[in-house]
Image (spheres, rainbow, N blue to C red):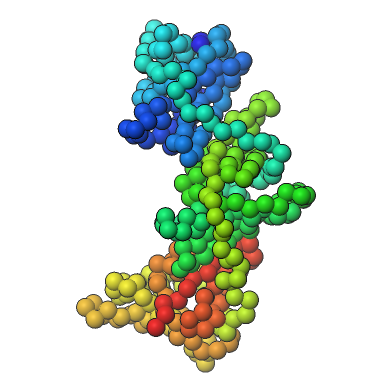
Length: 375
C-alpha cells in the first residue's frame, strides 16, 4: 500500500473511528484501526464487536493494500505532524508515515486478524436530517435503564412510521419520547421498530451532530447502519454499524395519561430555579413536594430536612383542575426540564400516585413522563 493524503483529513478520520477503541487485553486486535487503500479511497475501520465505525478519505493511491495499526498511537502521532501532506506506505507489516524529511514507522498486525464487519442489505432504509435527528436523540438518551435484567429498556426504541420516527427511552421511573417528522418524505411499506443500544446512540450524537446533511438509516433484524455521505463524490464518508437489542419494548404509550386532573402552565426557568433551591433541603431521598393552590393561582414547592432546615416557595402560574399534593424526586424533574427548549412548560398531573407529564409549550413532538414518589 502507498497513498498520499492531506494530514487534516487523516487526523479527522482517526479522531472519529478511535472513539470506540479501548484497552482490550483479551483481543488486542480490537485496539487497532484497519487501514485499507482501494482505488481513490483510504478506509479506516474500528470495532468493539458491538459497534463498528468506518470512515473514508479521498486520497491519491499509488498502490492498494491494508494493515491494522494501534489506533491511539497512530492518532497521537498524527496530532504532532505539522505538514500539510503525508505519505502512508506498508513495508513488511510496518506502516511508514513520511512527511517532508521525517519518517515514522509503526509495527502493525495483519488485516486478516481484524474482525469481519457485518454487511447490511440496503433494501430497508430511510433518510433523516442530521441536526434534528441528533438533537432528538440527545433529548431521550439519558433515560435508558442501566440494567442487565431488562435489556430491552437499556436502549432507545425506534419506531419508524410513514411520516415520522418516534424515539423513546425509559428506566421505569421516567419516560421520554421525541417525534422526528420526515416533512414531505413519506415512507411506504417500511414501518419497523428496533432497540438501539445506548452506547451506539451516544456515538451517533458525537459523530453526526456537527454536520448538516442527510443520514441514511439501513436496518435488518439484528443490525442497523447509519451512513453519512461524502460531499465531493457519491460514496459514504462515515458508517456506524451497531447490533440491536433483542426483546420486546414495553408499550409505553399506555403509560402516558390521556386525561389529567390538574393542568398547570409554568415559566420554565423560574420553575427550574425553584426546584433547584428546594433540592438543597431534600436530603438523601431527593424528595420535594408540589402543592397546587387554585385560589392563589399558583403552586407551592416544599422540601424539608431535619438536619438542615426546610424550604417553602410560591410560584404564580396558570392552573386549572383539582387541588393536589404530589412528591417527586427533584432530579427527575430537572432532567426533563433541561431537555425542553421552550420558555413555558405544561405540567399535567393525574392524581397523587399517577404519572405526571411535562410538555414544552409550542413543541408537540416532545413528551416527558415522571412517576411521583408514592406515600
